[in-house]
Image (cartoon, rainbow over all chains, first blue to last red; front, top):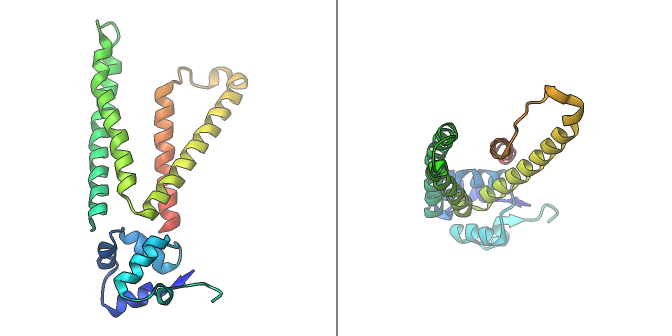
Length: 65
Length: 130
């Protein structure tokens, strides 16, 4: 699963630590999600999209999509 | 750092403190309990510190985020499998090795082995997910 988390974060000039604090997760988790090494659970994916104020399908998308 | 992450870090610090109490109190109890009336009482601090370690370890994992919980699960799975393989290997080697193997391996060594494998598993899982 690919995502636009890094692009959306950088648009807002947030650091990984800023985003991690907003999501109440570790910076390592944000880093792994951005790198595509870890696919978040649905609740966390919805929380991320809410934090960016975007629908979830604009933040996360299937590799084949 | 969010509130859950702060609680997780706090429990990790408490786990370390409990371990710093557990190890010396266990070693002291083992050293002085023999030949002392009601020597088992000496093990009470180690028992309490051990229970605290279990509680803080659970708290640390429970307050971690989903990736941290996954890392702990992977580390624990590695630790149990590695410990089981080590025990079986030791059992198989015990007879042919004879006196070459150290005698007097007990429960404490199992805990030490499990802790060491858990730490190794944590390092490997953190590295894999970094």
